[in-house]
Image (cartoon, rainbow, N blue to C red; front, side, top):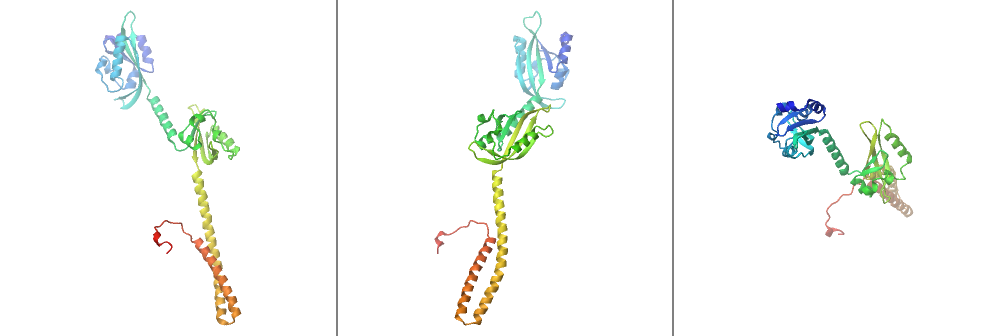
Length: 344
């Protein structure tokens, strides 16, 4: 292990203190030294020291074919290579997939025309890759949402809108970027609501606002929406962005109006049934009296007046039956009809 001893102690101290994994390969291809961060990051053991790097034939990771070729190129030609976000899976201390940035560099010795060693620098970037994937997933959700969404900077200038925003309001993404959300503001929304909104959004203990307002599309059509805005804050607590999500309430409001109308009709039907009942009873009594009088007299004049009375009672009874039919009205339904029998 004379090669290990030949690594200058001062240089080794510096490399050991680095927060990246460092591995040295000598000119013949022997792994002569690695710092503790290399072992910590890769999960490998010092048993790899003294072995030829070409013995490792990983399908992926730090000793995949491209990495081995890069080490060989550094030893032969002094060429450096970089491999960002290399996916690898190490066996210990616990098997897990990681991502590392790998730099392969040539180390030249003074007085030698060719590289004396190759240095492999390795840094775990799993957290960075994971955060990048989360950001990508969030953006896909942002773009795919069926609800209009807008993202502004800390000053309230729109920096992005999703396709649903473009579809609902008729403004293209390019038209929105650089403008304020009042592009779709309706004059039917009281200014006090917006004042309250910004008080809540800028309150460090809140940073959130939700409420019903009206928005206007580029053609002037207005629609009720449930708008929810959340302040996006950095780790230090400062607000970097605002994310707004608008749920269109047009269909819900239409349903509520239809439901309220149906409730009114139901109440009117109940009232009609009650009125019909109250009127029907005295009408029946009057009809009984008229029929009784008709049987008790043969006077033509009286019979004529009683006939007029019963005709009017029948007319009133038809009105009562109409009220009862209205009170018992059923929902229309579709049924099959033989057109050949219609009118016969």
